[in-house]
Image (tube, rainbow, N blue to C red; front, top):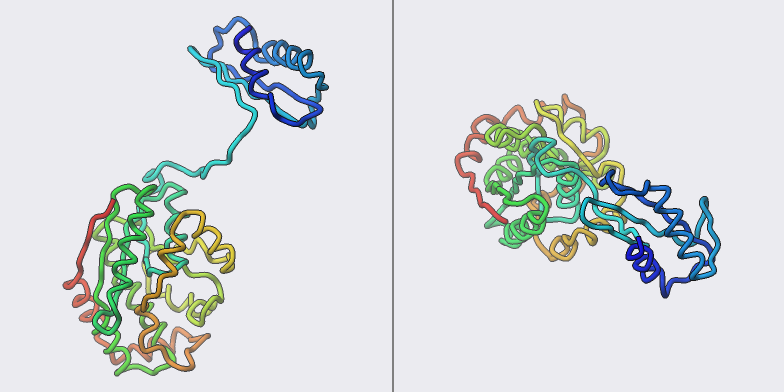
Length: 301
């Protein structure tokens, strides 16, 4: 106990306080004193040496003591960690990773809750540059710090987009892109045994993310689409991106496939009937199969 008391005194030196409290927890129940007895003895020593008052309810300073089988740990500060669950205990998800700010944060929030993330990225090279491909691999590497070895599926999407542009009404283009991405992603989810899709969508952030449009996009999916950021605004998402280390990569300029051939006036409240009619000229099964036949994959981390 002498060593514990002296070490506790050293720990509180240099701190500003008028009152203090000692809290003790024992994992080694064979220690000769109980937790309240340790707290009382150490607390009395600290009060005697510093002149501080004891305050059990609202102290200026708390000294924590943890007694284990071989050691005693003493601290006066608690640093908030990330928290969460071990990766994989909550199952596997397929994250639609765009290269922007939002989807990496959505991925991180699912990883934090114990989901193992597999990634899928749609790109429109050669109509866009390769920057989005490079960014997605870099973002997956950052997320692999928590997600460990991570599989990234890359889907060439340019030809499919051209088909949509030439055969469907302009206001529905982006929604039809998203529905086709969802169909393809769902097939890939089956390949990797993922139980849900994950997107970085936030309610009403852009035209395709109104409540009505989100409903019409997910209507063609047979597995859940999880949207961890649905109720967060951009400032909150940016703060998280900065905290997890993806913001600088996400904000490097790149051309996103969904920004290709964007109509001047996109539909903000498309109905299921309107989208079904817009897709009536498309051979959906053939388009999905073509995309899957050209699928590439990379392992990172």
